Amino acid sequence: MFRNLEVMKKQLLFLLLALILSSLSFGKINLVLDYARFFAPPEQPFIEFYLSINGNSLEYQLKENGNVQARLEITYIVEQDEEVVSFKKFVLNSPEYKEGSDKMEMIDIKRLAIPNGALNFTIVARDLVSGERIENTQTFEAREFNTDKLIISDIILARTLKLTEEASNFNKNGYEVIPNFVHYYKENQEEFLFYLEIYNSEIVLGEEEDFLMEFSVIDKNTQAVAANLRSFQKLKTTEVIPILKSLNIANLYNGTYDLQISIKNKTNEVLAERSISFRKYSSLTSFNLAATENTFVEQFENKELLKEHLRSLQPLSSAEEYDFIKNQLAYDDLALMKKYFYNFWLSRNPENPELAWNQYKEELMITDQEFGYGGIRGYQTDRGRVYLQYGKPSSIMNVPFDGDTQPYTIWQYYKLNGLNNRRFIFYSPSNEMLGYQVLHSNVPGEINDPNWQLKLLSKNTPTLSPVRELNGSNIHENSRILFDNPR
Image 1: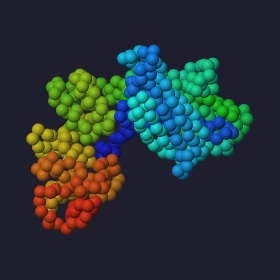
Image 2: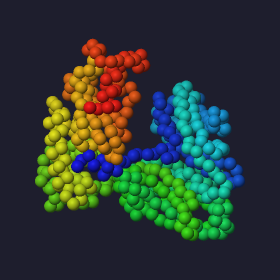
Image 3: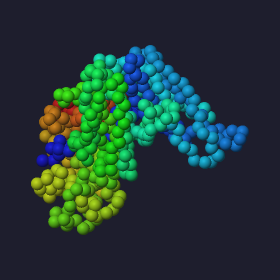
Image 4: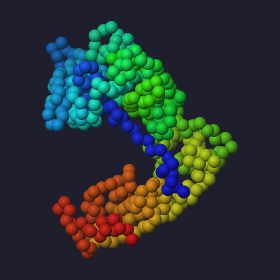
């Protein structure tokens, strides 16, 4: 039964890579770089780079007036097919501070013209006081800005968005847009601001034509609209349409979400789409909806035992779920722990959550007997975790001695999550045949190490099985043969 729980649960991926290019903190300099691509018909596309620098991460130079100031040299290089297509080099000076005072964040925006297609981007940051230097290169996905198609710019998630008449690099169509560089929102942040632009609607739909923009917030875990955050806006065609929106995200649960934008014509045909990911931190959780009165969890009055039950859920939990479990363990609130535990099993078996828990408890006992040792419970071991997550393997081959390898065991699943012939190899680095660890697997999401045969080697025993050389070391072919064709 429990080998199917991995299919039932949704794996949550914390993906802020949709627009965040990089967060760099190599050495002392700490900066975050975000970007968004826009189009200025009839000119070529351009990219805006938004830079946030932690003022406390820079070195400060004493000036003649007794104040201190930091100076940071930034270089942006955009390349296409190994040719530099855009370049900008500049120096940012911090405000002057009294020595020893706390330093503020420094923010900057720069616009660079770019061609269509895939691009490589390099940032070089050099502290002109300390001499420290960091460099990072990333690749943009290809993005074509064609004049004959309706286009949505990248989406800016905004920290602040307000009307302004002042000239500023952050001014967009009469609004000052300060980006939210990190794309996450704390519990007390209820306002969600975003900005985008729509191009070529007149060319595609005609002058003064009506069309529709739909925007929604989608829970990445369930792929459903979250907190009823879905709405429409009627628009009229023109050359460039700026969109500024504010949503109330106070009722979002703790989790990761996509803001999805789609443009539709009068026949409801989707003409263009764009999305961006963000994270909301909250004490609210989808697991605190159902009450626990008159349920099986009411019997759990021993707080330490309940904590252990919660820890034992790790093999079945998504990353988000286990983060919440750790939070509950830290809060140390018996009622909240009961509520989470009950709703965890309710989400697995809505008709009979107690049965689901009892069945899992039996599996826990098996892993304790088979893989537990000393003070380590079965679910805390790699073999126990794999057993609980994927179910009992179809075949097991234990190899306690094979030339100069460490003890190892190979598990094979004939079918696993719709895939055939999935395998694990576990090994015991201590040679004690107890604490076996996952060494290599062909299961998606598990450790896949091309050098696993080298790590399997032990220098304590003589070579008996057939060997070949890999990266200057002799390795045993037998382990590869057994992994590829378990017996």
